[in-house]
Image 1 (cartoon, protein in one colour):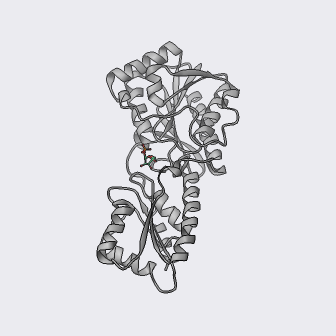
Image 2 (image 1 turned 90 degrees about the horizontal axis):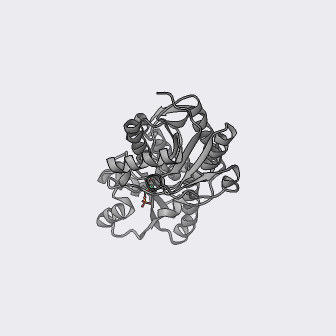
Length: 327
Ligand code: F6P
């Protein structure tokens, strides 16, 4: 069945990411440019179910490109996973005259989108927004670059006090189960090591890392630890160290949600502007149920099924770079 798209709904779902607002602006302005009406759906899929919707004009998205967070608010919605929830969401779309959806978020958002699109034959296009960078089929997700810069700024500050006291710091960063933020922030901040879920850190590796980090020519040591049950986080690693090396005066910093806030970097604003506009192009080209990605600086359309596969690899060669440079 061919859809004529006169009106789209846009929503943000899952964890927020800096640059989401820039993407909302881009989708809205590109749609209006092409004569398509835009309705902003608040609180993600929850608002699609309950009908929390407002018509957007060009000026509705003025002055937001530089703002972190999302003006549409966000939520993680279990109800949308139920038959009843999806049915209500579809009824809202019909009532509001929404012909297609543009959804901004990560793999959870696209999993919901894929099922909804299959069950109700609704055209949906996704835009990858998450600080974790763990979405397959795109080199970068919106928010990742800003979060990386936020981490590096924080680590630089911790380095000052680590140097003064000649201490070892374990700094925990976000990433859910992916090590992109940890590994690249370790390289960018000149950290001594990174512990990521993709590489096992056994006792021998931990010992090697400590020996290298504490060699005589250095007077502080920073280890970036990716949050994850696999790594045990900064607390887990620090307590393992305490057992074997009680002599070390180590400290732990968990950066937490500050990594998700702040004004988006120029890189994220540009990425959001490109991917958002491409989402409208994709709908006009009758693309259905795809995520817009960036691959080798080119726009690509990635089927939701591929985007939500849980196997985006970190470049392990980067670990060698880190080891070489922190020697
Ligand atoms: O997916 C983004 C993210 O910030 C992850 O890095 C983190 O594990 C998770 O969200 C935290 O979620 P919440 O804000 O719901 O605690």
